[in-house]
Structure formats: structure tokens, C-alpha cells
Image (tube, rainbow, N blue to C red; front, top):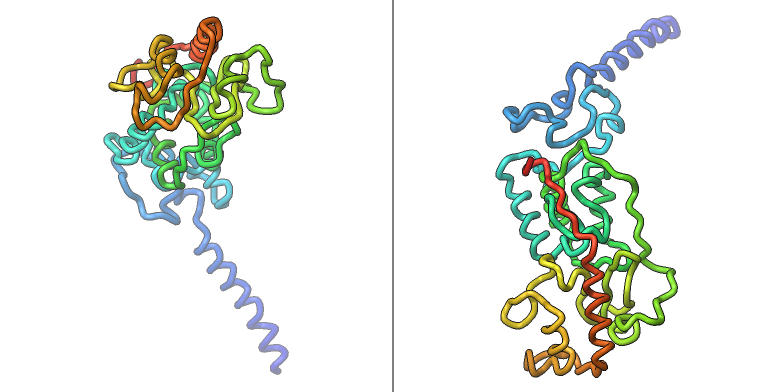
Amino acid sequence: MAFRRAFLIGPVLLAFAGWAWARSEPSPEAGCGGCHAPHFVARGSCTACHRGDPQASRKEIAHHRLLTGKAAEQGRPGAPAVAEGRRRVEQLACRRCHVVGGTGNRLAANLDRVAWKRDQHELESSITEPVENMPRFGLDEKQAEAVIAFLLNGADPGLSEATYRVRFSGANPDRDSVFEARCGGCHRALGPAGPLGRGLAGPNLSGLFTPFFPAAEPGGRPWTPTALEKWLANPRAVRPLAAMRPVGLEPRETEKLAGELVGVGAGNRLVPSRNQR
């Protein structure tokens, strides 16, 4: 008798378990609302800010290329994260090497064309753990998310370009380069043909003579070959607390060095962003 009762109850329990599982799994018709409380409904679909696939019932598919945290604020007009990301991009002078929001040097990837093609974790890794010749800015995860929000806000999701390759390490240094011989022990710079220098003690000098390099020349003026020559002759005569020692260059060396750094900013190209069209 007990055996028959267990035999009859078993299918009932299995049916109930199947019903409970079905109730717990979001249906495709439920979309993101099957798991998440809706917010900013006036902005439209969830994918406008978060990407993903709201029609999928499996989490790993529904969350494909998902944007989270501050990065998801990229679609909100006037979002604080976008404003914060803009400030950081300006402070860090990202346009020394990248096109951002339609302006910048074309020494590395055009971020207007690749930002939407990368996953969030790829973008975060590029910022927090950059490749060898890119400066390490020391941003944490939330700060990196704000930068991503700004990049996505100004980039066009429909734009793309072929992989942009830059040689960052492993190349033989140019033995005729004045930068390599006299500056490379403390500084680095990225040029169209690849990186220059190997040092980390001094600032990265990519794009030194372009409008996108921080105006660190005394008086807040942009760097020029003349200002660089004066600085190299005696840094402390220009800035009394400068830690850098004089670099005794011959006139021909100074001229060649200026030419190499001008070349660092070569290839500058203005590309209109989606917000400027």
C-alpha cells in the first residue's frame, strides 16, 4: 500500500516541481522585466542603455555584451557618469593618441569607431591594465566605467573599422633616434611607426606639440620646439623645482628631436561624432 501511495505521489511532485521551475524562469515575453524592476521607462527599451538580448530566456544570452554600473548611463541625457567621464578624458589627455568625440591624434585606435564593438570588460581592461606603451592612469573600476559611459555616449554604434595595429614592444629601437638615445631612459612616446623610449620616470610625451597634449609648459602655454629647447638646456631655469637635469644636446640633435616629436602628432584627423552630425 505504501509503495502504491509513493508511486502515485511521485508524478504529482514532479509535476509540481516542473511548474515551480517554469514559474521561476523568466519567459521570453517577459523580457528584462521578468527579472529586473523597470526604471527610466521613458528612455525606451532596456537595450538602449544596457545592450543585451531581452528576448532570450537564458541569462548568459540575455546578458550578452551587457553594460552595467556607470557604463550603462551612456544613454541618459545629462547623466553624471557621462560628465565625469568627459572630465577624466580631458584630464588624462586621451586625445594625445586617440580620436574621441571626433577630435584627437590618430596614433592608436579611433575610439569613436571601436568603443561599441568591444565588451565592457575589454574596455575596462584597456583602461585599468593598459598595454605597455599606454600610460597607467590608476583608475579604479567605477572611474573606468564613467570613462566608458562618455566614450559610448559620443561614439556611433554603426561605425566600425579594421583592427588598428600598433607595435608596443618587441621592436628594435631606432639607433639613430635622438629620443631613444637621450630621452628614452625616462620617457616614452607613441609615434606612427610605433613606440619610442622605455622609461617611466617622466611623463609620456605622445603628441607633445599637438593641441591635445596637456598645457604643462610653464605659464600654461602649449609646448613648442622653442620651449622644449629652452627646457632641455636648463629645466630649473624654467621651473625652479624641476627634478629633471639639463640635457646637453647639439643644435642638430635638438632639431632632430623636435622633428621626431612633431612626427608623434602626425596623422591627426578630425572625425565628426554622432552628436556633431
